[in-house]
Length: 221
Image (cartoon, rainbow, N blue to C red; front, top):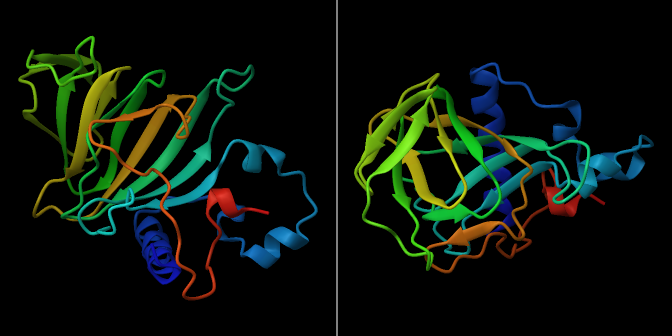
């Protein structure tokens, strides 16, 4: 991805979050020079990879396959103490996530504001293939059964619980606009806990064509 594209997406995300009165921590708006001058102890931010994350999954077509993420809190994989994580995610119409599951993470995906969100869900086989069996999930505490790959549509305020090894993807329902999505989960580990149905690059290379706006979580010095 080009740095100019990441900067543009971060600016758009800030405006969208402000529109929906969703506030990020003060350090979300630190520039690289602010981090270098900051004298507070921010080991937790660095070690647990909090902050900005913009990805096109290596495909080079963010408008079709991409996501803007801000990790608000997270624990340490396999560690003690904080055993949970939280993210804010922003998706635009026309975008989809790649089909994937998590070996260890269990998560609630919440439609916080904006448009509707379409979920497609599949059980996994013992060989990590897509099963054709019906899927039963909890939608705001109510069990629902859907056919494999069928569309489950949730509006603002609604959520679905995605357990381990359940293949899923989600995307804005066409015609309903951008979506602000919340993720509340067990500890997040994007380096080791994603099983993509098709090979994907979780953290794409960056072409530095202009100065960065806000550093990504991996770039905090």
